[in-house]
Image 1 (cartoon, rainbow, N blue to C red):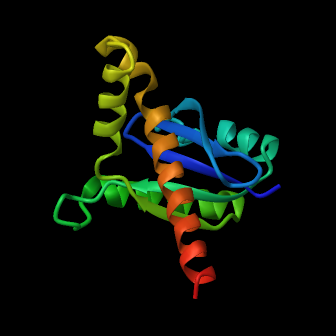
Image 2 (cartoon, rainbow, N blue to C red; image 1 turned 120 degrees about the horizontal axis):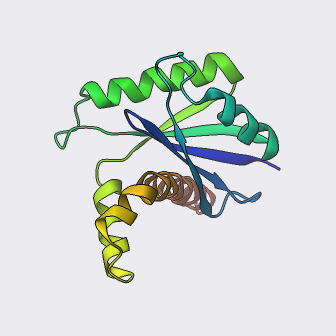
Length: 149
C-alpha cells in the first residue's frame, strides 16, 4: 500500500485527507486542532493516522498568492512541511491550493445549501481532499503523457 496523505494547513487546524491504496482517489478524514501552546502542532494525531494508513508520502497545500508568489501563509505551510519531514521522515510535496477553499465552499453550497456554520466545521477536511485529488490527478496525467510517447 502506497497511501498518500493530503494536508490543508491553517493557523488553528489541519485538514487531513488520505488516498485510496492505488492512489486514485482522495477521501477527507478529519480536522486536527493545532495546539501551538504546547508546541505539539497536531503531530501526535498525525502520527496515528500515518501509522494506521501506512502513509508513504505527504502532500501539503501551498496557498500561493494569485500572482504565484509565496506569502506568509505559504511559508507557514512550508514550515509545517519541514516539521512533518523531520518528525516522520516522509517525503513531502506541495500542491498549489490557490482556489481549493473557494471551490470547497462553492461545492458545499451547490450540494444542498450547507449552512455557513456547518461549512466552517468541514471546510479544511474538504480542502485537504481537493488538494490531494488535484495532486493525484496531475500525477496521473503526467504518467499518461509519459506513457504516450
